[in-house]
Length: 199
Image (tube, rainbow, N blue to C red; front, side, top):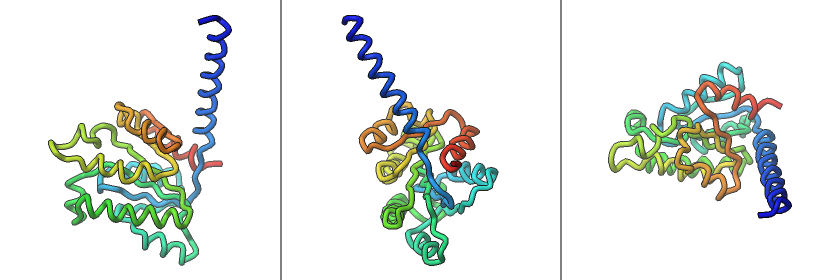
């Protein structure tokens, strides 16, 4: 490869990288936000802690339904964004009296209503590989079903890096042209939320 050709390739790579950085830094959402789960895992609680600490206008409801979105709109206080945390817990679903099929049906209707209202959809996976098929009991694919139901349908993805070791979320991001925001550890969620919601 000539120096001239190598220079062109390097320029193109730098341009692409800078474009991706710019895209991520300009990804924004609005408040109020409602946080829910697809799979009844404890992950949404982590987001709730930081949203409360940052004093952002939010609601936390692990079983948010399409009707909840409609009620807020009719009350004149519609949600502007919806975070659906992926990853399933058999224990959590058991306690809530639901199974994964109930969750998938609820989420499908929820996403449809959010789209109808033009609510920004944010798919989140914040519990790492422990909340992926690799951390599940043999034969349990509920974590992956949760991811499949939510992430390709969203406007933005927020993922803890160790949950993306196999590139699953990177592939979803590329295939659906979605911004992917990755973070290293749970404490980084505060800055992720600030970057997302503060102008």
